[in-house]
Length: 342
Image 1 (tube, rainbow, N blue to C red):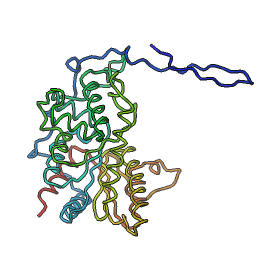
Image 2: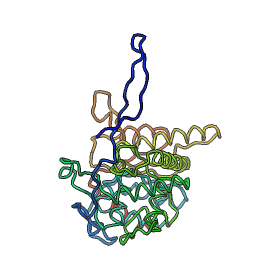
Image 3: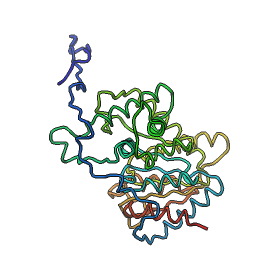
């Protein structure tokens, strides 16, 4: 199961000592076809644009929708950062339509969202049962997802494009003869077709494609690094715009924070500012007062979306809003408010 990778010489009390550095051999994994996997989500679970949705009476939701409309009328940025759960709640068509209408100017997400988007477009189903498959190590070890996405990432690395663009190109163009009968629900394909930046911000070991023998970690690192710089460029244009973080507890606020710091660093040298913009955090979690950072003895003090997105980065000119609720309700309602705005 384990293979020796190299020997390193260290000195222990003046005597050389060899330490063996071992790693897992992915070639020994049993990789199964997607046809053998049971799925908890299919394309039937993706909302149509005219779906009946539950009401959501939230004043902040109305304010955020108005800010988005105002920003786009002024040709300012509307950046949509999300975790995979947002699309798993059936919102892909709403997000695609907002791109097609020119509302969303940049989408950013994690590796899991790319995986679910690919699988829905490729086989019309996604979302394995982790508890069911982890007991004997089947979880995540699926051929088509691991091979096709990793090969697309390697091609992206060779062509010096970003992670998200490489996935969008794969699905939109059907690279290597791979079929995507459900391409219409792919956000990545739509972004690639429309020329909307779609960036993926991942860590190695976070996603099931990292398990596959075809995974090239150098290619992953370069392409997601490219996406980080593309995202930071969009953040550098955030003045008078809107930044939304939907369902990302760590990746979203952290990538946004570093990008904003870099953008403000360069803007300051030019005598410019990036301070007057709106942020919104969509989450299942609610707070008695989302503008109160609290103290280090409070659990919510360590909630990154609240601290970073709603307080620290908007306290000198911007405004932040928190919208609590299930994404199967809040996202469709936001969509409706935007598209029906006079």
